[in-house]
Length: 184
Image 1 (spheres, helix red, strand yellow):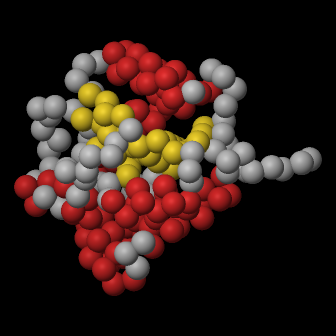
Image 2: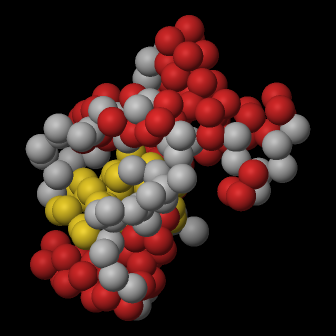
């Protein structure tokens, strides 16, 4: 069996909490699988979530997610006390492994400029999407809404595509399929 690095296309997905980033990643996966492409979705926060499950006995359920603790752990502990790039370095190492098995890698939780920059430095075949769900109350507290992971990209202007998630899933799917057709 010959194993070759596929130099996958990296699609970074950014947006506020509950704006549809994971849904966009699933739609991208569905699109490329029609063409027999192998797709994996990764999240920078996967490591934080694993740590939180062990530290706090959280069961991993999205409905009971301890968002404030996750933000604290990711920013105040990992980024400020260990290494500002710890999580993105870890993700890049994961991509190195997956690049031998997948054609497309989506990252559905890109929230910081250093994450974008490091991915762009390491992978030239990349796209950056922003998902916006206008006039949507995501249920976050004011403190959570003002966390750096929610606001750092507010004035960032180098997105390749901005996707407005302002209707139903079918409409969102059509928008994304059209964008992906044009990426070829």
